[in-house]
Image 1 (cartoon, rainbow over the protein chains, first blue to last red):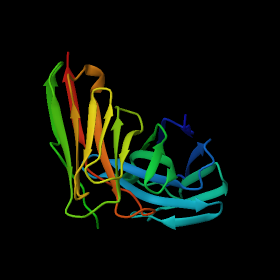
Image 2: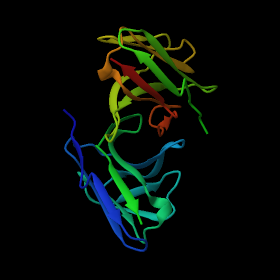
Image 3: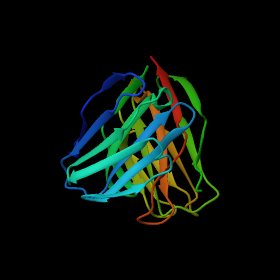
Length: 110
Length: 111
């Protein structure tokens, strides 16, 4: 079975803090993705990576950065968390048109 | 932007009933996926359809891809409380392109 794990299920941070969300996949996929999911807005792509050290902006990259130092690991970084970044964050890996998701991290920024 | 519209947005039914949810677009997709997401969890891939007119069955779930590859439907027979969740469709306009997600249908099956 495909396994995508995320470092935290729930996270509470304060405005201005630097936040790291980590994602690990065990399927040797080249592509990895970060989405956020908000009620009424669906899933929106933040960033994706198609290889180690390679990244591409998605639809809503502002306020986020990513790091892919190893093939199996893709990190999402919030340089200075803001309240409007409170959301469910979902990591996925796979091909661009078939993706396998992790369990999600529900981030609350106070 | 490729838009996928799902209907209905919400559906509440009794155990044992049948239901169909829809995923529609004005654009052609090379493939379309259906996911189910339970509260507090990530979406789980149910099926991928790639050929116009294709029908796939997964136990009580039947998925169909429209002949023109612009729409899809998911039919559940004899729904059970375990079917409760958010059903998402997602499509790629061509192979290798990014997925576009629909807004989802939130299904509740009452015992």
